[in-house]
Image 1 (spheres, rainbow, N blue to C red):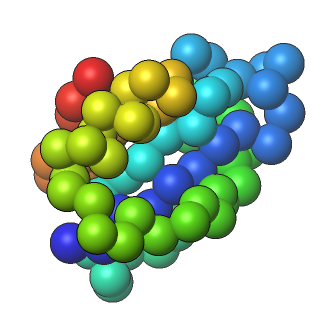
Image 2 (cartoon, rainbow, N blue to C red):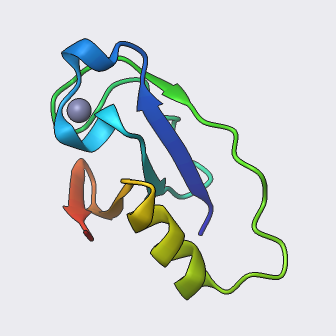
Image 3 (spheres, helix red, strand yellow):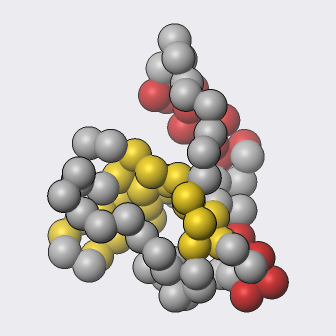
Amino acid sequence: MPTYEYEACDTTKACPICRNGFEIYQPLDTPRLTTCPECGAPLRKCFSAPAIGRSQSSFDQRAKEAGFSKLQRVSKGEYEKKY
Ligand SMILES: [Zn+2]
């Protein structure tokens, strides 16, 4: 499943999740998020360098260290916070 990264356009109005950015798994047929599922703040998509040759676990570790939260779409309109 593709992973997308987003961050708040205006960090002064953002919640702790989107202030530092987060990544989310979304099916290809799902529209891109434009607002935070947590607080509704406007989001922009992040463009990060692809993690070539790195394992998913080390990516998760680096994402955590960078202050990212990880959300997983569990059902229509519902997101589970992974960390
Ligand atoms: Zn938010």
